[in-house]
Amino acid sequence: AKLDSFTEVQEKIDTMVAALKKEQADEVKKKDYCIEELNKNKISTDGKKRQGEGLDATVQDLKEKLKAVEVDTKELDGEVLELKKQQKLAAQNREKENSEFQKVVQEQRQTQVLLKKAMQVLAGFYNKPLESFLQDPQEPETFGSYKKAGAGNGVMLMLQQLIADAKAMEVESSTAESEAQKDYENFGKETINALKIKGKALEDKAAEKAKLEEKFVMTRQSKKGVEKEVDTLADTEAQLHETCDFTLQNFDARQTARKAEVESLFDAKSFLKGAK
Image (cartoon, rainbow, N blue to C red; front, side):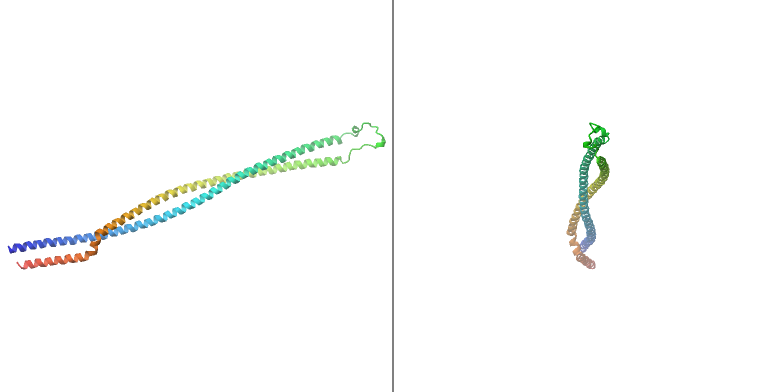
């Protein structure tokens, strides 16, 4: 009966030793798991934080680019407005100049008509035979003989000069009008071309702004996603610490205690074997 009791105790010791060794092995596995998972968590967290910082920088860069596009667009709008203003002003000035030209030409042509009529009247007078001016060819000598004014030729020459001056002014005005119209048309073409270029630039800026805004929205969404992942990793880290801290902080002491307990059990078993 004594031998049976010893045998039962030895078997109990073997069971306890096996359990203690399993606990030792399980604790080593848990320690390795905890260290590995905490390291993975730290690496992932650091990576996500760096990614978040990069996205922050991208967001700021996109904000600056959008601001620059808005400034450029505002400048282009101002330039377009100024071109249209100059275009309208040029049309008004051209209309005014043409109206003045028509008035000058009409006046000069009317002047030429009047001067030519005056010349015709004078020419009709000075070109008549002298006898046509005398009622009685046998004019008494008392009054002296009638003579046409000698200054008539001078008057005719003055009228001719005035007609020439009016004609020259008409030609000069027509030339100036032609040049002004040509300049206006050239200015109009240049303005239309400039407006077309500005319009294309505004379209490009609008397209660039749309792309930047789309990228801005996507980047902010990505940033929110990364922030959510960082929060999830933080929760995982907290759970790991809750599960692992006791094991990691007391691992050496617990391993040493179990080892000592196993050795004590082995000593007891050896003592029991010697006592048989």
